[in-house]
Length: 337
Image (tube, rainbow, N blue to C red):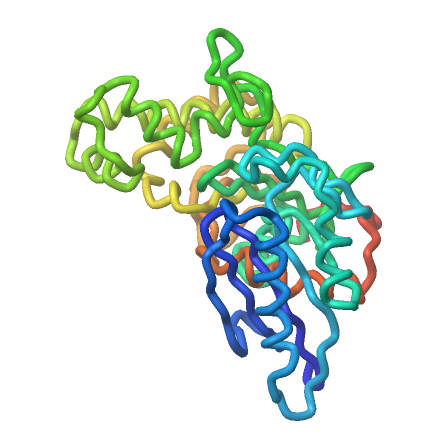
């Protein structure tokens, strides 16, 4: 990395964040611009490419640009880079994001799901590094619920790039809330920030606070209706994690995103329900839920460490990851080393 730098883009529904990067957890430069979704996807692509060009032409001494990584909401068809009915990017279904960016820039880029790149960053520089874990699963609780899988230090994409859509695990199959994916009762409708606001309005009507943060503050003060909402969040997460833990049997599951500020409100219900629901978790549950050092052959669920920078950092890492080898399933990928 001494003689090179990469550029990463975190495509969010509200903001575009673009950074140049040369190693570690800090950026050389960052650019923040609004995501002008109302002006169309071509406008968003132009804004993104203009910011990339601005960083690509900066003077970083002897460093040369080695690659560009893009983290985007999904589902994303790979390797083509085509968005497929993204719930949080209405009107972008079928959009060939890779082709649009590459034709504007005149060079190739690496594209992946935003939760995938956040999970990659957490494995390299966050909880994965702290606990020496090479395989993990990450859920991000924000505007939606993202999910990234890292197996033996590499993103697991599945056969079409759509592996890791845990936000659309069904957690309520009777009268479940409608989801932007076209389904009903998805985790995203019970553990995202908008879902928390929706549930508050269902319980409290016009007296409901306007943001999930305000609902969490009231819950922390003891408001019974707000506390009930976060108990529902914990319950929904436990159902989704039961499926993930029983299926994947990974050593570490990370939960990140803005909703995690309310960890103490939803985690007790989440852990209690997991003990009741997940056969594998009961067999592998640690005595200390948040230790300084992980035990082998135990299943841990911890908060993310990198905060809101994880997605942008992961996008910067993406072209470097591809250059180091893109094999998705290496020898013994589920071993906690």
